[in-house]
Length: 168
Image (cartoon, rainbow, N blue to C red; front, side, top):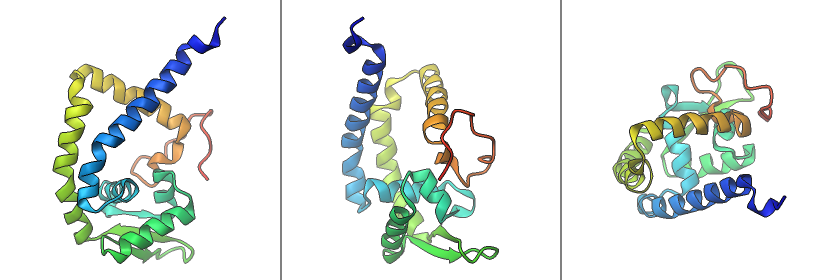
Protein backbone atom coordinates (compact mmCIF):
# COMPACT_ATOMS: atom_id res chain seq x y z
CA UNK A 1 0.00 0.00 0.00
CA UNK A 2 1.22 3.48 -0.83
CA UNK A 3 0.95 5.50 2.39
CA UNK A 4 1.46 8.77 0.51
CA UNK A 5 -2.11 8.52 -0.81
CA UNK A 6 -3.62 7.72 2.60
CA UNK A 7 -6.84 9.74 3.11
CA UNK A 8 -5.74 10.53 6.67
CA UNK A 9 -2.86 12.56 5.23
CA UNK A 10 -5.32 14.27 2.88
CA UNK A 11 -7.62 15.11 5.81
CA UNK A 12 -4.77 16.67 7.80
CA UNK A 13 -3.48 18.54 4.77
CA UNK A 14 -6.90 19.97 3.95
CA UNK A 15 -7.49 20.96 7.57
CA UNK A 16 -4.12 22.73 7.68
CA UNK A 17 -4.76 24.54 4.38
CA UNK A 18 -8.24 25.64 5.47
CA UNK A 19 -7.03 26.85 8.86
CA UNK A 20 -4.16 28.86 7.32
CA UNK A 21 -6.44 30.34 4.68
CA UNK A 22 -9.12 31.31 7.19
CA UNK A 23 -6.59 32.92 9.52
CA UNK A 24 -5.21 34.94 6.60
CA UNK A 25 -8.72 36.10 5.65
CA UNK A 26 -9.72 36.96 9.22
CA UNK A 27 -6.47 38.70 10.25
CA UNK A 28 -7.13 42.19 8.74
CA UNK A 29 -10.27 42.84 10.80
CA UNK A 30 -8.51 41.76 13.99
CA UNK A 31 -5.42 43.81 13.20
CA UNK A 32 -7.63 46.82 12.54
CA UNK A 33 -9.06 46.47 16.03
CA UNK A 34 -5.62 46.37 17.60
CA UNK A 35 -6.08 42.78 18.76
CA UNK A 36 -3.81 39.88 17.87
CA UNK A 37 -5.51 36.57 17.20
CA UNK A 38 -4.57 35.40 20.72
CA UNK A 39 -5.88 38.64 22.27
CA UNK A 40 -9.12 38.30 20.32
CA UNK A 41 -9.59 34.67 21.33
CA UNK A 42 -8.98 35.57 24.97
CA UNK A 43 -11.43 38.49 24.98
CA UNK A 44 -14.02 36.48 23.05
CA UNK A 45 -13.77 33.51 25.42
CA UNK A 46 -14.18 35.82 28.41
CA UNK A 47 -17.19 37.50 26.80
CA UNK A 48 -18.87 34.13 26.28
CA UNK A 49 -18.19 32.88 29.83
CA UNK A 50 -20.51 33.17 32.83
CA UNK A 51 -20.04 36.65 34.32
CA UNK A 52 -17.57 37.40 31.51
CA UNK A 53 -14.93 35.92 33.80
CA UNK A 54 -12.75 32.80 33.97
CA UNK A 55 -10.17 31.42 36.37
CA UNK A 56 -6.76 32.01 34.85
CA UNK A 57 -6.13 28.24 34.74
CA UNK A 58 -9.40 27.67 32.88
CA UNK A 59 -8.57 30.49 30.46
CA UNK A 60 -5.21 28.82 29.80
CA UNK A 61 -7.00 25.52 29.14
CA UNK A 62 -9.51 27.12 26.79
CA UNK A 63 -6.92 29.01 24.77
CA UNK A 64 -4.34 26.23 24.74
CA UNK A 65 -1.77 28.59 26.23
CA UNK A 66 0.56 27.68 29.06
CA UNK A 67 -0.15 29.32 32.40
CA UNK A 68 2.75 31.71 31.85
CA UNK A 69 1.52 32.41 28.31
CA UNK A 70 -1.98 33.29 29.45
CA UNK A 71 -0.49 35.45 32.21
CA UNK A 72 1.42 37.46 29.60
CA UNK A 73 -1.70 37.87 27.44
CA UNK A 74 -3.84 38.94 30.41
CA UNK A 75 -1.08 41.33 31.58
CA UNK A 76 -1.09 42.98 28.14
CA UNK A 77 -4.90 43.16 27.97
CA UNK A 78 -4.99 44.51 31.52
CA UNK A 79 -2.56 47.32 30.58
CA UNK A 80 -4.93 48.22 27.74
CA UNK A 81 -7.88 48.25 30.15
CA UNK A 82 -9.68 45.41 28.33
CA UNK A 83 -9.41 42.87 31.15
CA UNK A 84 -8.95 43.09 34.90
CA UNK A 85 -7.58 40.46 37.21
CA UNK A 86 -9.55 39.62 40.36
CA UNK A 87 -8.48 37.42 43.25
CA UNK A 88 -10.51 34.31 44.00
CA UNK A 89 -12.47 34.72 47.23
CA UNK A 90 -12.08 31.06 48.18
CA UNK A 91 -8.57 30.23 46.96
CA UNK A 92 -5.71 32.69 47.49
CA UNK A 93 -3.63 30.91 44.84
CA UNK A 94 -6.19 31.50 42.09
CA UNK A 95 -7.31 34.57 40.25
CA UNK A 96 -9.85 35.41 37.60
CA UNK A 97 -9.57 37.35 34.37
CA UNK A 98 -12.68 39.47 33.85
CA UNK A 99 -13.67 41.42 30.78
CA UNK A 100 -14.08 45.16 31.34
CA UNK A 101 -16.54 47.52 29.70
CA UNK A 102 -13.73 48.74 27.47
CA UNK A 103 -13.05 45.11 26.50
CA UNK A 104 -16.70 44.61 25.57
CA UNK A 105 -16.63 47.81 23.49
CA UNK A 106 -13.49 46.70 21.62
CA UNK A 107 -15.04 43.31 20.92
CA UNK A 108 -18.31 44.87 19.74
CA UNK A 109 -16.36 46.98 17.24
CA UNK A 110 -14.61 44.01 15.62
CA UNK A 111 -17.36 41.35 15.79
CA UNK A 112 -19.56 42.65 12.91
CA UNK A 113 -16.68 42.56 10.39
CA UNK A 114 -15.40 39.30 11.85
CA UNK A 115 -18.83 37.68 11.39
CA UNK A 116 -19.08 39.07 7.86
CA UNK A 117 -15.66 37.60 7.02
CA UNK A 118 -16.60 34.24 8.56
CA UNK A 119 -19.84 34.15 6.59
CA UNK A 120 -18.11 35.10 3.33
CA UNK A 121 -15.28 32.58 3.39
CA UNK A 122 -16.52 29.82 5.69
CA UNK A 123 -20.01 29.26 7.07
CA UNK A 124 -21.81 30.87 4.13
CA UNK A 125 -20.30 28.26 1.82
CA UNK A 126 -22.13 25.48 3.68
CA UNK A 127 -25.80 24.57 3.78
CA UNK A 128 -27.51 24.67 7.17
CA UNK A 129 -27.29 20.87 7.40
CA UNK A 130 -23.62 20.81 6.36
CA UNK A 131 -22.79 23.42 9.01
CA UNK A 132 -24.67 21.51 11.72
CA UNK A 133 -22.88 18.25 10.81
CA UNK A 134 -19.52 20.05 10.59
CA UNK A 135 -19.97 21.59 14.06
CA UNK A 136 -20.91 18.21 15.55
CA UNK A 137 -17.85 16.63 13.93
CA UNK A 138 -15.52 19.37 15.15
CA UNK A 139 -16.82 18.95 18.71
CA UNK A 140 -16.13 15.20 18.62
CA UNK A 141 -12.54 15.84 17.53
CA UNK A 142 -12.05 18.82 19.87
CA UNK A 143 -13.22 16.82 22.88
CA UNK A 144 -10.41 14.33 22.24
CA UNK A 145 -7.55 16.61 21.24
CA UNK A 146 -8.35 19.63 23.46
CA UNK A 147 -10.61 18.46 26.29
CA UNK A 148 -9.83 21.62 28.29
CA UNK A 149 -11.22 23.88 25.57
CA UNK A 150 -14.42 24.35 27.58
CA UNK A 151 -12.80 24.49 31.05
CA UNK A 152 -14.75 26.74 33.37
CA UNK A 153 -17.73 27.02 31.04
CA UNK A 154 -21.17 26.00 32.22
CA UNK A 155 -21.62 22.28 31.65
CA UNK A 156 -17.89 21.69 31.17
CA UNK A 157 -17.82 19.45 34.22
CA UNK A 158 -19.06 16.56 32.07
CA UNK A 159 -16.68 13.64 31.91
CA UNK A 160 -14.21 13.71 29.07
CA UNK A 161 -14.02 10.70 26.76
CA UNK A 162 -11.72 7.99 28.09
CA UNK A 163 -9.32 8.54 25.18
CA UNK A 164 -9.02 12.29 25.79
CA UNK A 165 -5.80 13.73 27.14
CA UNK A 166 -6.17 15.07 30.68
CA UNK A 167 -6.22 18.83 31.28
CA UNK A 168 -2.94 20.14 32.66
